[in-house]
Length: 550
Image (cartoon, rainbow, N blue to C red; front, side, top):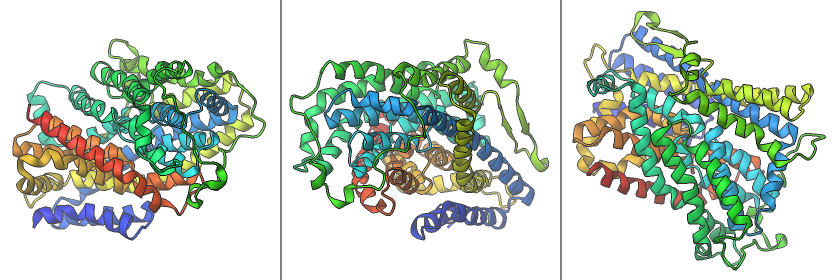
């Protein structure tokens, strides 16, 4: 019964957000209310502790919004300067084969954008680029969604780990376990990140080939999924060009950069190969002529919107801000350099909120959001963006963040109340751990097969792997603790499942459809991407089962 009660916050999110289809800004306050009532009346957590958890969650949400704003500001500035237009033109000149274009723009550029900005931006940036290349709007949105698995595990500069997993695991029992192993919290996150990357390398082997098969199966002249296999050599090359650097970065540098540097390395290796015709099939694949496209393929947006008066720009100049972003992020994150320590010292926060042991802090100078903003200002100078264009960019980014803020400002506090529900007068463990006890009793040693599906559920409900990690990391850790499996492998499997769940997350599907003018056609889009999501979750579960049983 207690396990069923622990499930109520998750069921509340499912009911309001998915079944009743309320907007997140309306659904999440009610879910927070359900969680707070359970915490107070059943777990008998003091009101001051519940209030402190809400404040803590709101503080964490503001740090995430800061990152989102910085990422969107940089993207808006590059659109105003004409850099996005030049990048698109560069992609158009590489190869006429649509499968190759989908792999380069969707998988490689999408991985880079996911690593740099996250939060659904691969679809927001990549889908309009594909439409401009001549892709049907439905195909472009599908590609933008289908790559959101392996790269999404690390997201925007490691946010799914540095905010999601870190926040989700911040519980006394986990901190005691980490201290007992003689590890720092950062080192423990890095260990889980390394395992996640190892799982991601294996799933990532299939992503480019899956993109090709989805493209030919749904949008080819003969509707043949097998036709996508003809590009297998190029797909494998593109996969390894991204996933090997991705894995190396996760093992030796940190969780901030696998997707960003993996995508960047992949672009640097694969584009020259494609231009020389290496590994490409003899027969080119193209879509049917436009007049034979099905009605559901067309969107109302035929090309991405361009800022007025943009001019042609060299590819080197267009890519310079992204290169600067990667450089600055790396040199400020390496432990071997003094910058990381210096930037982390400017810390603000509120410890012992309302006299409890709960606190929240933030390093504003170390935040990726601050670095995004600084690079955006550098792009203004490098690319000659006018003051008026900068103001437009600022308003655009602020408008997007303002729209996302209400949902996030209730969602994260709900997660913190959920996690901080232990230690009440009732003497129960926290809700995630009670839920873990119930799950472990049912699944037993077969839990690794189920772990990715829990993460996928969290992402499907929230549209965010970060949120899924926040909500379910402690749950996965608790199940592992009870059945004697690796805590780290189960947490990693759940996180990887959360990444795969982004392919069918309602919020992501709506966003991807919106940028290509397909609003109202979310059902058909989910039907196209649910197959790959199921395949990836099954593969993650099998890998986790083998990994846990080593």
